[in-house]
Length: 120
Image (cartoon, rainbow, N blue to C red; front, side, top):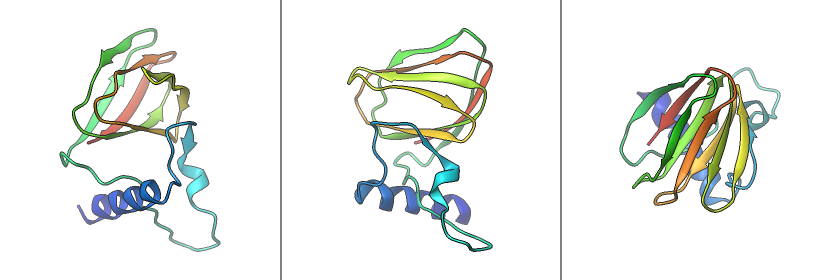
């Protein structure tokens, strides 16, 4: 739980500073640029306090829908396309993540069998 709290604090900090933007795919590897044995970065502060494991089979979709709260989608494996009504369209692979704004229609289409962590 402490790790989740630390991760979420990092997300909120980066978001509020403008480091996290919904205009391009981001990857976890790019967050850690210092030469340190252990590094942390807050990526997202959940509103609903939920972490959901999501799997989508190849050529299947999480159909278009709206989330009432902001969410953070992390691709763990596979390859998929995230798109939303604002024109965002990002290909996600292992380590890539996107911020999903509240009340914005979006969907995820799997190009390969894909696994995600959805944090709300």
